[in-house]
Amino acid sequence: MTIAQAETPKINDKREIFGWAMYDWANSAFSTTIGTVFLGPYVASLAAKAASLSPDKMAHFLGVPVAADSFFPYCISISVFGQVFFLPIMGAIADYSHRRKQMMQLFATIGAIATILMFFVVASLWWLGGLLFIIANLAFGASIVFYNSYLPDIASEDQRDRVSSYGWAMGYLGDGLLLVLNLILYLLGPKIGIPKDLAIRVNLASAGIWWLTFSFFTWTRLRARQAVKQLPKGETYARAGFRQLWGTLKEIGNFPETLKFLLAYFLYNDGIQTVIAISSTFAAAPLIRGGVGMDQSTLIIVILMIQFMAFAGALLWGRLANWVGAKRSIIISLVIWAGVTIYAYFGLKGPSRVLEFFILGVFIAIVLGGSQAISRSLYAQIIPAGKQAEYYSFYEISDKGTSWFGPLLFGLVNQLTGSLRPAILSLIFFFIVGLIILPFVNVKKAMDDVRSYEAKAA
Image (cartoon, rainbow, N blue to C red; front, side, top):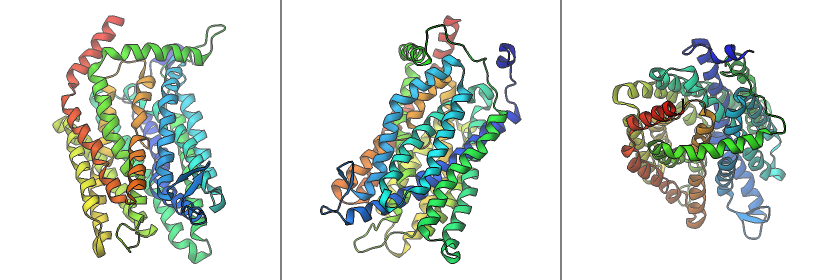
């Protein structure tokens, strides 16, 4: 490929946009099947069995006592804490070398293989589920950095809200279809001689197979924007990446409104991702004294309903952003998210618990994709060209499937209080602080700052 060919692909090309969106279709199976539905409750149940054999009734991982239903939230925090250090340097290397597509392929493959290996998580290896999740989530986050960084390249400024929402919608449609297959196996498996534990392990592996298989649509249609940059003699990509990252860290001080948006986003999206990650653990637990948790099949049906409604919700929020503006549409979504946590704290009691969980799911579905899709496209407007992977590496610290302070807070409050209710209510902190900061972000000034900086650098 020549430099001329690499630098002049068409923008708003429907074929390429479809290929780009298909990566959302592919990787969202990991977020839902692994992060939301199966792995958390499954690992928690295995950890609980291990804890029952321990004198202190705690599961022990590397000698550290852990509450069974706090283990998975802790694993989420560890994986994302690792991303804080890992993703920015990967983004810098990708921008320096112009190897975004190749690095996206590499990390998608690593993440998918780690997910497939979750088939081997059994009672005696309960901790393996957490270890493989940490590896897979690190790789997942890295691949999403490069995926997100293509948005400003493939869509013009006036089309980014729509294209971003389209990508999220495709993600919900794809993982919704896989979840249908997962549900069929989970419900019908025992009738055809497949134990539920084995059905869960097959479903975990299926997410990795789905992720890897459908990624090939993206590899064949997504085009590189620049020719691969060769290293000077004696130089390494790691050293060049660190040098470029250091320059970017100094540069980002020129964009105070972008930094303000990132701070708000880190907080409110950490809350969103925590709600998504722990929702099945929360619903499956016995929240009332002497009660029982919601059964797995009901959980899957509710989450399946959320996936298909979220497909429409993501497209709706793309239109809402055009009507009221991107920032206002995000603020509206955060008000709904705060209401969700309050409802979860006071509700979900007694015989109407299943109905209440369905109602809760409806509100989550309405804002689930929209709040994140519009945040992604808004961010694309307020970062400089040529360094998208680096800037999206900062963004990805709390993007799709990644959060660290929220799960840590949830796990600690649950372990200290012995109840999931105050743990879920503690997450309202993230939405309230996000609602306090976001209105003060001046989007127009952020865009003007970037244009002014680029003009001076030209």
